[in-house]
Figure 1 (tube, rainbow, N blue to C red):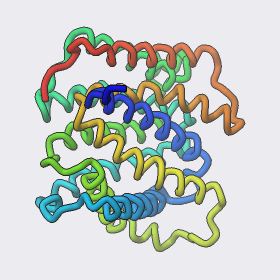
Figure 2 (figure 1 turned 180 degrees about the vertical axis):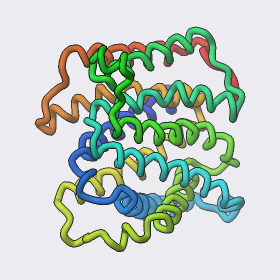
Figure 3 (figure 1 turned 60 degrees about the vertical axis):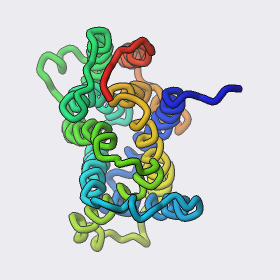
Length: 301
């Protein structure tokens, strides 16, 4: 078998990314109200940083030159931290599938940031795909309720999480802009450590106030999952893909998240959403297909 191209490697990384991220929605809904979001995410960043650091040490990939200009890691760690804290704050009231639909608005935001940061240009066909995906996301966010859509009745949790998604959308092009040749694993470690430091400083009072020894089991399950799979692994996957694919195509895989979340919800015994909501999920899947057609749909770095 011939070696996979850099682009193909990036696509496979984002496929795994979307499946792993979806689990954090279904588990996060169950744990969000049992612990402060900042405390949870400071712990998850610490766990993810330790795991990633062990791997970096074992592979011997880190070099002194990789830690130059540490402000870059603070920028990326800050963006990542904002996203995760607001995600769990939003999940206090937003259903898992609805929150996942908000996440699918990230590609259209990433397309805009991709132009601002990297001057990546989106073609009309890709713009159409982003519009279709956004329409599907909005349909799910408003729970297939036309009256709620006309009144623009957005849930508080969805609104909070949307602000976090803006931070996530900016993160992807910034990875490419700030990377100076560091391996994805090393760059991820710097980002995770910086994120942990910033969250610890910001949320120190909440961390101290948390009764860590008496937290419900679901919180620890969620913490381990998001720390290992939805932080350490996905951080590497996202940075790996961001160095091989345009920002809009990296974020295109978020369109798979609602579908993965539905599978997670069924597996966890929470049932599936109604048929009308599935129309929106189908639209986001169509958008993914259009975005990933490799015919020069986007140009730039």
